[in-house]
Image (tube, rainbow, N blue to C red; front, side, top):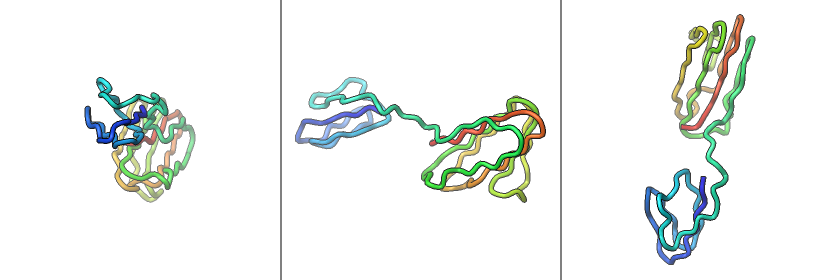
Length: 131
């Protein structure tokens, strides 16, 4: 997430980036070549779309961070064994994944609040990330 500052009295636009006059902007993209009047202040903080990621074994209920806004995705990968996944309620129809299987759910505006994972034997990873 580079930070740029604009020393000019006018906005500078290029490569999908707009830096307002006499201001500093953080962006997730870089200028291909930094325009006149723009100074690259730093490369950090680096963009990291991962909100949470964990290794799961046994039965676990994972709560998606309630402060999360906008679109996000939930990715579940069954490493070994088999797993049962239910979203939002233990009454929901379960999805079953076997070793090596993966599911990715694209979510908008709090579609999934909780993920209930039941693993009889084996392990899985659960990753929640921004889109």
